[in-house]
Image (tube, rainbow, N blue to C red; front, side, top):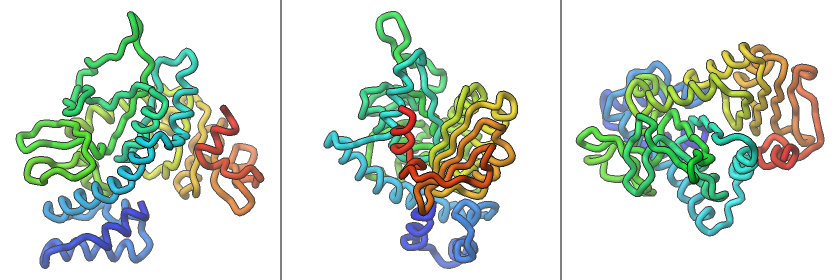
Length: 307
């Protein structure tokens, strides 16, 4: 989010008048220390400015995503998530649920790296059609195939709305003509709650809600617990069943620490980077305990411990 904030401030070009006035409020909030979500929250932005923010957000994330594609295509991608997912499917599980607020295709690349089937709500193909009924099924012989269901509640780099109001997926790494295609990504701030009443977001959020409501455990990686679409369901499930919960982050946000201390139940671990290795938060050490295990806070390091 910090990189995106910097990218927007460096690259956005606003017109005099309503655009400039609205963007000045956002810039002032950022300069005062607000994170991007807080800076955009509750502000009325002109449609033209919002369109520019969506386009720049797409380009910022896509630049990184494209670099990762080249690594994955060269078969050099050591995807920690792929290693974890294939391990989870080497069991009685036929499905693994991934709920993400990210627009990137890291989860998809990770599945590809291990030849794991995945679904994002679109029928497979180069021109992917939105399949809201769940009618697309993968089967091996007479049995359902093992699959990773990826719920991208804020949209994806490859989701677009066409000029004639169709929802499609396109495997592109350059932003198509704005005249014909609008990226279906929900930017931080007030707009995200307006957009989520429309498909594909509505159906995706419903699927994510069901996955979270029925989860037998949670592994949260790099999640800040600032998103009202996601963390209330996690809190609800922890209160109902006290499910095992692990939160990994380079730096745990204050919101994540509050969740662990007050809302995660009594069966949790929170792990972040520290000067000596990693700092681990648990019911017996709510303020954190130092361990010398390096990179335990990262998914790769965590895999090395548990797999």
